[in-house]
Structure formats: C-alpha cells, structure tokens
Image (tube, rainbow over all chains, first blue to last red):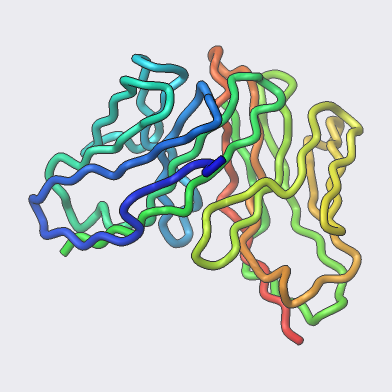
Length: 114
Length: 114
C-alpha cells in the first residue's frame, strides 16, 4: 500500500493564482482531512470529509474548497492564493471507527505564495 | 468543546536524559488519546495510543498513561537519543457531534544533544 500520497511536494504561487493540492489514499478510509501547519500554531483543520459526497468545514476554511467524489481522493483547491496561505499542508485519512481511528498522514505540500 | 494543551517547547536534553512532555485535555465524552511524532521534513506518524482510562500506550521506549482523574496523558522516555529529536503532538478523538475528527495540541519540539 502507498498509504496517503500528496502532490506536489513543493509549490510557489503568485498572489491571485489558483491551484489544487492533490491527496489520495489506498486504505479504503472513510475519513479524510486537510490541515495546515504554521510555526507556533500547530495543526489547524481546514476541511474534512466523513465519506464520499460529504464534506464539512474545519477551523480555518476561508479561501479553500474541497470535494470528495470518490473514497480515495480529496483535493484541496485554493481559489485565489494569498501570502497568508503560505504554509505546509497535510492530508490525513482514517477509518470511521471511533476510538481506534489512528490518523495516517501524507508527507505534506510546502506552499509559498509571493 | 474538546481541547488539548501541551507544554511549550523547545525541550532541550542531553542524550540519555529522562524525558517528560506534559499533555492535558478537555473532552465532553470518553476520548481516545494519542501521541504523534513528526520528524523533520515529514508528516506526522502515530507513536502510541490509549483508548480507555488507566491504559498505558508504549512504543520505541516511549510510554504514556491515560489518567482520567487528572485528564492527562504525559509522554515519558527513560533515556532519549539524538534520533528522538522531533516534534511531538498530543491528540484526542471523541464522538464530538457525531464525528471522530481528532483535536491536536500545538506540538512540542524536542532537541537532543549528543
């Protein structure tokens, strides 16, 4: 199993550009999430999904869109990039099993917005 | 709502020293508790977990005991190595509003010197 994969690993954007961060998992997990990690702020939840066709907002959803058309994929779209979105983005997935839902994380995408 | 509070870092130790990283939590139900580790340039990975009160999770020489009476899950290791240098995240998972999306602490950086 490849686990959770993310592409690209690095990206530089100009303010106002749009892009999609890709995330895929091959473990048949119901739950998928996107986090951003900033110095001193820990992990902040952007959006999450509890199954195909179902998404919800996390702590910091503004400026980001998601969709979940399949169990495997959960792309994150930046509609109009801003310097405040410079961060490291992590995708994670888990089973919907309550007490046992260990999160599996991807390797991250390092995004810089100029 | 749920919350996790970790001691602020960085924690700087010499090799073979004893490690404690404090973690306390607030939850509405009966959460499962986790410690994740993030090595430089990588995503988070599960270090250990405990699913009910008085359970002890252990892995790679690290231990943490689920203390319901003090709402704590402190991470300990008897003798740290340089290779343990990483960021450590405490997290909880609870049926908060019907979803098991975890809540993470802000992370504690550990630096181990030879």
